[in-house]
Image 1: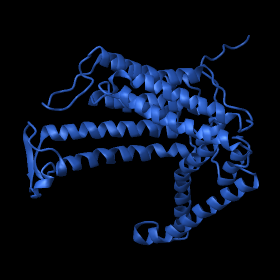
Image 2 (image 1 turned 180 degrees about the vertical axis):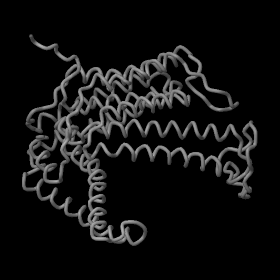
Image 3 (image 1 turned 45 degrees about the vertical axis):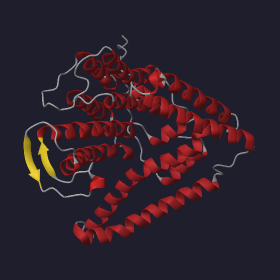
Image 4 (image 1 turned 60 degrees about the vertical axis):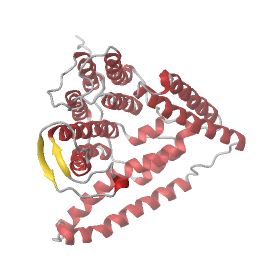
Length: 381
């Protein structure tokens, strides 16, 4: 008797672009709202998905760093509001700081003064929004392997992608190096905390970073990275299309996010920028030939993960177009924020990756020579 077939996907690594599409959708949703309840819901969804699909790879250890950075962003935003915030806002005065007199040409700037509850709530909301956006991109950096992302890039963006990949991989490798140096010093009975520990760890950590950089550069040079033949005219044309396309995409995205800007031309400009970028990719791909060994597959789990992020964006956009109350929250006057049903329901769709995506296999840490081998062969795992 044959056993029943499992409905859950078999363990494999999800396509990195699917993770980035999901994270970008959640980040755009956070940009379009200042409701603290919706922002907290987005953060909870992102944290749950990361906790259910995070591996033990070096890059997966950076999510706690983004969590701490988010808390720091909220604190800094509150401190800025207390010291340099707008004065004269309605609300109950919580405390008053000494006022620093300024010259007439700086009348719009205030240092010190009365701080109201409405001002603090507004600062907390804006800080929470920035923290949630940072958390979304931290989730993408945690869940998507930078090496597999490099392998998925088009040929025209491959060289620029290598620089980004090396930069993304530097922080996790630095964390591993610091942990190894601390363990070695602890075994030798040397201090690992305070000024003495920092002074003793600085030189080994710096030396290790330089050694990895030299190994990576030597390995890439020995494998002939970046040596290809290309006509100067096609290279200049591709570069011009990329620059123009990115500029038009940025302007169009600003018009999409701010409904009152560009008189409704944001979406057409955004589409035009995407067309220019696609044309540059096609033109540059003809002159850059790169083979792939075992390319990442794009199957139904990838579609489900990417579509869940788009659903969140579509839900809050439709609610904004319909005039649903509760999407924006200013804190003036101070009231309990409402929880709009439609945006909240579409944000919960972002939980789809926690069960629709395949459970990832345990990733093996990569070193600088391994990254160079991946670069030279087009991303061989």
